[in-house]
Length: 210
Image (cartoon, rainbow, N blue to C red; front, side, top):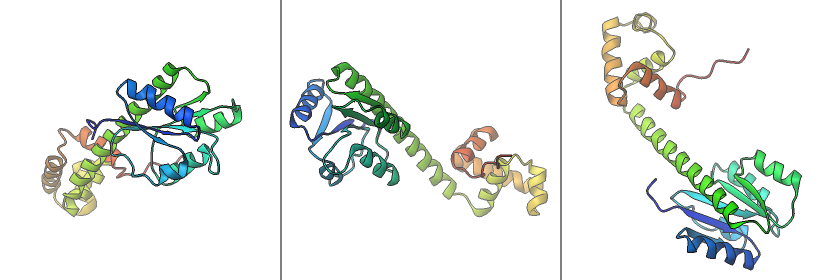
């Protein structure tokens, strides 16, 4: 997935801006898809590659901020670069607080847009790699027996083999056998690595704040 050619999605109701951004990106060999409206974008299939969205914040009907909120609510994570013909500070603050990469006022410098796009694509590439790693860990954890899962969770809580054996009523040697098998299946080279995997899988709830 990380080797897939990245794409930049551009949503702007101004045909001149769409064409200009499209020409710029294509001249640099960057894959780009242009949309005249948010509704047109929402009808498209999500890209299965590193993606960045260049979005006009003021659109007829649904605004760019509305789309940002909608994407977040549906867990569709796309790095967003907002562009606007009006320097609206409160709106830009709101967009940045919600995780936007950049807020550019037209006319913007080509290099500023390109820099922001590179940040967005890098961020999405890293997120996709993390999602892929997490899916692999979940698959490995799912291959464990119920007893092995139980012991992994106890190890993640910092419990020693002797304590685990006492807690679940089996011999300490048996705990070590289950732990060893779990580490092999999880492909963990050490107990600390197994603990980090458990953290990524959120097997142990965070302690409540006092």
